[in-house]
Length: 56
Image (cartoon, rainbow, N blue to C red; front, top):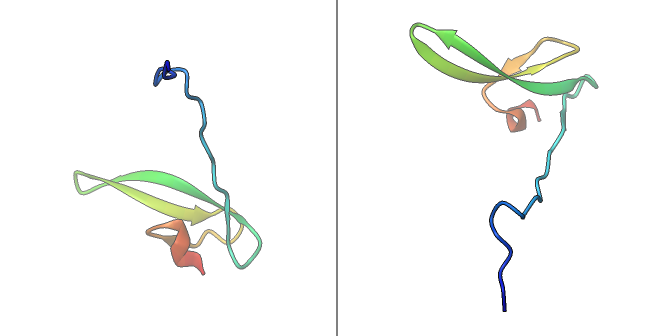
């Protein structure tokens, strides 16, 4: 039985996170002190955390 090639598989999921204030959480990349840093930030209240799951 033939397998589908890895390029033919197009299943990707996008998960949306929401803050307790009701705003949407977006990931941002910052460059500080010579290092790349990923930060999650709420659009509405501008609160920042390390990852989206920390907003709970």
